[in-house]
Amino acid sequence: MSRLAPDLTPEEAARVRAAIRFLRVRTGRLDVLAKALRFERATLRRVLAGNDPVTATMVLRVARLAGVGLDEVLGGTYPPAGVCPHCGAQNDAAPGGPRTASELPIATGSEKRTAAE
Image (spheres, rainbow, N blue to C red):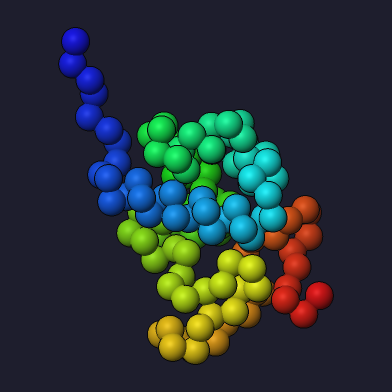
């Protein structure tokens, strides 16, 4: 029996996993992220561990939650290089200069929070 080819390249899958890790920190806990993405927590754990494949549905939900396009997640431009997932500040050495958490769309709960709150 032959297996179907995966939907994503290994590089794209790694980029999606990096975005999920970033979002896990931004949302505070894996179970909060799982609920926001409408996946079981165990599913995200298996995907992050590399035991389950990243699906096209997962990519779409990650991009929607992050407020970015699919190409940004798959291309590796989300999460932005040098951005702290805890506070949203960008390393001064990173291109584009300092950024604040308010520029990153992820928040826990129904309201958005900024680093100043």
